[in-house]
Length: 172
Image 1 (cartoon, rainbow, N blue to C red):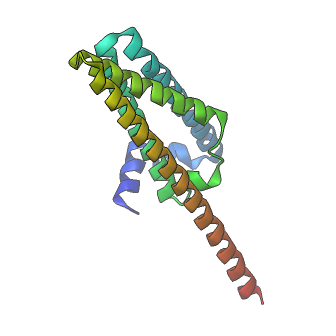
Image 2: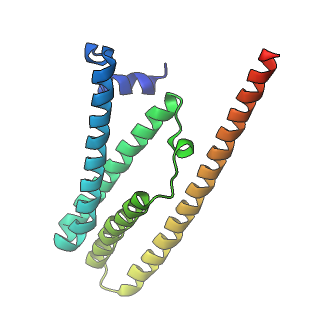
Image 3: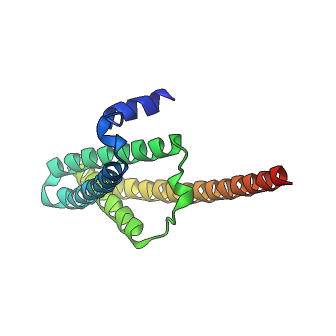
């Protein structure tokens, strides 16, 4: 067991006797998923609103919220991957809720950056250049994410085919 998995098990208190009952564990896991998703949506909505409603302070808070949400999401995905589940290959990523989350991320991060740049620079040229660079970097990250998703899906399909072939060979 890796150090990451050991640390995650400690943080999640996964060795508690509570988890020995399957029904309790299943219900708690569902409740945790609902709580995680609620935290994610509340954070995204707040992050999208704060730069516009609370000015520079709201922009800084938004950046903190977004950074925290990204860390929590990657820890969750990393733990699942360490336990043998790659969420990028076992679920469809082109869903309306993921598009909405992406829009909220862009509104929050973009709003925060625009607000902070406007505060530190009276000229709009730097702001527009920064927005253009951000758009290019964001688009590149999106393309990279799609390509990685496609590669993971192909690798998962190949692994499943190899496992199926091995199963047939051992049964002969």
